Image (tube, rainbow, N blue to C red):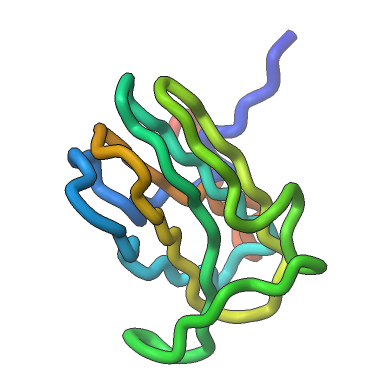
Length: 126
């Protein structure tokens, strides 16, 4: 039997679905209250480039590339047409964002899945 994850995950957009005409700095995501963070990037049929995670202690500024030892997978992952890329984050900063460096223009979107909440939701289908 498949187990429920809905009540244990919070999914937050960092790159809204769009056609990349240039490099994209995703919106920051606050990871406060969660112990797990995974970036999911979905690319369209023509999209080519690289994606990475940046982190900061301060909202709105101070973002820097995450160190390799705080990434599950690798930084600057190549993305190709019709691909899904997953990168895990195990750092300690409060804010994260995705950064896409364009190679070829195409559709792209990215979300962070936040898991292992400090306070889990309760109730059926809440």
